[in-house]
Image (cartoon, rainbow, N blue to C red; front, side, top):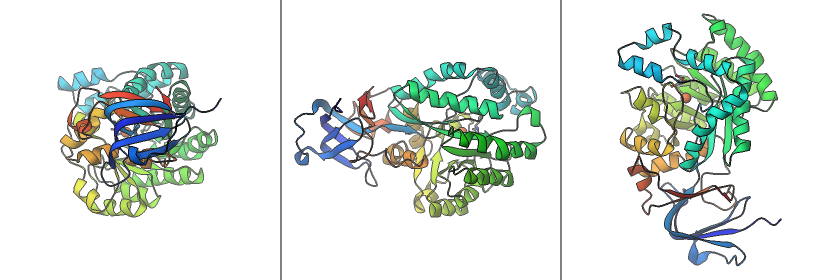
Length: 401
Ligand SMILES: O=C(O)CC[C@@H]1NC(=O)NC1=O
Ligand SMILES: [Fe+3]
């Protein structure tokens, strides 16, 4: 069957191909199910008489949105902990009662792969309803070979069952599991000698991540994870400088990390190292807001040194129980003072870069036909408004969802 051509006209294009939106006011995009064939001014568009004509009714057409940092596959809920904290129970007390990440680990270990798929599906659909066409999904609530495998297999299965692309990240170095209590180095032995090589060999991970933090893993333990990832030919990313400055970003940059994420406590040395390595700064306003953090990521330094900035939900049950990438656009502007252009770039071209994907994130010939049509005329409206969803239509690899 010949691949159907589609031609969207009567739209304003935000191509994301320059330092701003890459706007083209009277634009046309022609595409099939493999790629974009033309994206540009209607006046210069080649004729495609056989294409299906789609009227964009004067809306805004952007690349499909990319949520480049989520922990989407988990079982259980931490709503009870949220309530306890509001009743004055401390994090430490909750952790002492077996709460926190450990609670989600217990629930995730108890769930089957199919149960994980089932509970994750509505979360994925919530992101898709807002125009997400690519989502990164981490493991990190299994903390054993079998349970990390189960999480990553569930993530892969969701991409098979739904019109969305999934990039998987192995985050076995997320926390120390109960059976390795007070033996973090022994657990890192398990991660580097068994979990990473085995799951890399099974093709379940597209990247490797770690939580480098005073309450996570040390830079030395993180570096062992990076060495194992390198040996497995997998790129790395890092939860870095979220609660303190562990200088994890500079370490990650020395391993050409795709991204460093959170970054509230990032210093100029780390920014410079990231800039030199081409590492993307992924800012996570949902976790910043939910934790009532006050330390801002160093936006001025990131701009000054030309570090690409992405924005993501960090969807997870503990510190960012949010399933709206559109709200992250608004929060990135309101809380971090990013410009609307920076925010939209943060969920398109820069988010693609944070995943090492150069085939999406812009409206440009040869890239995937992942497209969002919005009922707005000013692209700033996508950052300005929140609580509403102006998505009119969405295509994933040329197929309308
Ligand atoms: O609390 C959780 O379940 C995950 C917290 C999450 N993980 C991480 O490395 N940083 C975070 O904010
Ligand atoms: Fe995270």
